[in-house]
Length: 285
Image (cartoon, rainbow, N blue to C red):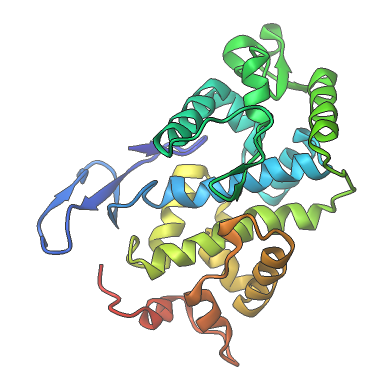
């Protein structure tokens, strides 16, 4: 069961145990919105949202500050930016997940790690963990918090200093990042992964992915969801941007263009969203 930030409605992922079983569903509930998915690492929400969060962290390494990213995405319509969400969820939780993933792959992450199995990673969150900054629960995370001000996040110069030291040690050249790039990097990385989810038939249709993002991550209703948003931007433009970022950031596999996105973007006219899955071989879940 997932609850979106500020959302008053709960929904369940109803998981089909195997492709042979038409009745092998788990997680359904009469009192919540159910979305049918196929079993997969991270299912749909965590898998696609991971790309969104990864790009936010990379953008901080490249020149932004956490409050810059949060402001851009909140202006876009998200109720909370990713770094405020991280503080709310607990930086220690993210650290433990990353450590377990690395351990399962037989690797050990350090604060100097830049690549994990050929994938670019950011250890900024790990540095905060080592500093004892776990988020709201400790009064300090990406932001600092004063209990008397109802947990209002305040930018912290100590975090800025940590980021600058980190980038210097890693040899990362910082630059001015325009707000539009923040939106495109975070959202299009997630969108590309969403198309992969459709390719692999983990989700049955794009509307299901949008429901998960609306109720799981409080994606702004005016934008519909990452899939509807992509349809409004235009799939050809989205595909071109994904290709551009893939060339620029070859060590992030979430930028490898989705075959389905490529296929849909190649048409001279926009394919309606409710027709996208017709371009997936064996489209039934």
